Length: 383
Ligand SMILES: *Cc1c(COP(=O)(O)O)cnc(C)c1O
Image (cartoon, rainbow, N blue to C red; front, side):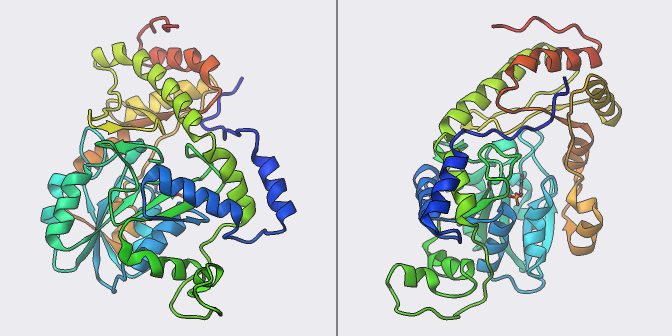
């Protein structure tokens, strides 16, 4: 039996809630299900205000609009990330300045950020890679001292914590994703999380095509009109209904993913001791959400060998990211600050293993295959 890399998990109530949205005859955005999801996000992720969007990419674009970038303004971000982290700002004419990542968490190296700041720098974007929060206290301190915005790309980090505080609440603006490859899903989907009250009013306006329609729905104005730039960032109620079925089960999904993650992590400890691989490192002050299980191999050929070995046994494993600083668009629109050696090395040596609810029964097969590729004998799995 083929083992896919990802398998979207359904909680079972998605279609029931979509049927309710259908019966409510409210299919456009900002209805009952949207508000339920937003309330949940505000409560659980500790943000002032959550606005559902049709993707995390859209939420990042809203953050870039709110930051009011002028052409040529700079934004500091990791190169080891998904394209949207950079694209959202490039769309506004900003220049992404790529900084290397820490070797342990593969998050933005906060010790390199200050040297990359110029008079044009407007914002720092931290990505919580694999759902492990970046060093937000240090980044916040740098942002505050230089008068910069701090933005979290928390696409992968729903229900992760940094020093007891939820990812998404640690910056001025944050973005999360409900893409079908994330922990909690709606196919495509996301949310903008607003922590700085300065942005509350304008965020709602940008969200609703540049109008004050949200204020009208609350009865604060008696007609709505065009008052700012904006776009259509809202998802339909059908999407929000699906998402609500997932958010209701988010804690259960998290517990099950953590269990799978721990099974991998324990199983690969002997391989790490033999020096064949490196496992993910979770700092003691971070609680991750088991978004991803990855292994770091000893360079490109070992990585290719492992992916081929897994493929020969019908197990789908993938690598990412092609560093943004050396990608064609990254070179055209941005620049690297300093050598990007950890980013380049990680990009060549990282493998993501399948991680989805229901994978438990085939985990021994995947683990044995990894051991085989490293010419080691896998230990029996602890029950
Ligand atoms: C998935 C992801 C995104 C994009 O999310 P979408 O909802 O697909 O737009 C952005 N940044 C990171 C780090 C991601 O992992």
